[in-house]
Image 1 (cartoon, helix red, strand yellow):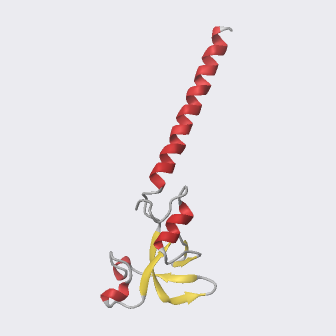
Image 2 (cartoon, rainbow, N blue to C red):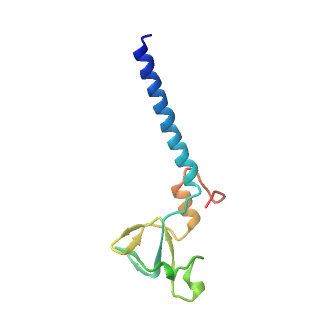
Image 3 (cartoon, one colour):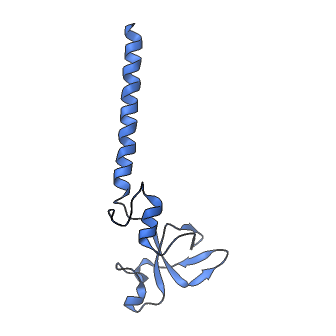
Length: 110
């Protein structure tokens, strides 16, 4: 086999190996990542727009704002956000992780 063909094969195989490592790294880190979340007012739902996005401070760090006496704000995960409204998401963090990951489930990271 000519030397030039051997060099091309070596380059192609290293490219495949590097690409595979990138996919593997993304799969391993996706289970531990936090799903995208927005603090929304549960009472503000509009059929055309979704839930109105409010300040993260209303949701606090522990989940629902109701525990802090700050109204009916709650974390809304993996939503499409447009013009201050969030739609097509879920209030369940574990459901959001299941939808996004590479087979991550409730026992996964995060």
